Image (cartoon, rainbow, N blue to C red):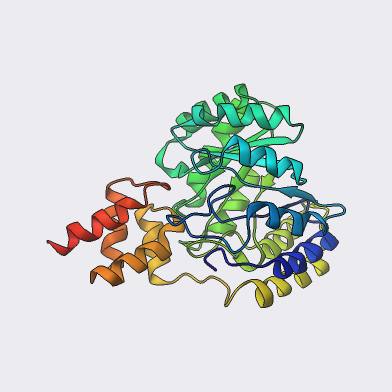
Length: 316
């Protein structure tokens, strides 16, 4: 939705998710605190307005906000806590755990739950990810885990990585965040649970970048079916998902050709719309752009490379 959700839309979904007993409702710009910008897309509401709109709807659910250092700052973090954030996942690219150290310390000092997640985690193997997660725990992370930011994983990939992280993390809870570019978000989430992850991200109707995230109401139903206790009222969650589909999105995400190519190429799911825009203006095939971005191992925050690739393709 290009970050254009309004306060009434946020309140409608947050109230329904709270009624369903969703443990944490995360809110904000798609790239987190401080990310509203010309490069990443201007949000309709300022971070403080977004947080305030949702905070007043949550009586039992906790409020989460996402922060990626380089986009979000300590100022953004402290403002979010003042406005009622309870949980803050701090993100770092999978090979840069050390960039999260300062923000994890500030989050712990603020008295809210400090999570840490590794972006584009398919770029590293199990042992390397486990080492990065161990560093994050040393920096103060109370939960650690991985994001399949490109929707590139297959279930075995997830099981091997979560198992290695589980061994390195001791009693610290493990997080998994899936994307559905290859149609694997649910299977990957179940694989993560089987391997020891206990914090699983999901979105109503899969609302999210690329082909969307793990579909929350399906996740809750399947976990219930497989004997896991979530504490979520499934009937009320289905009502919340209906509100999400009607009020938050034009249509639920689907695995179209661009999302599928993004997953195969291992490209950040949030690159879909910028790639489509740049390819159309440059008169090149967006699928070619995605595979070249994947070959160059471009990560989130390197959106300028999209335009560089388009220029290069124009001369081939």
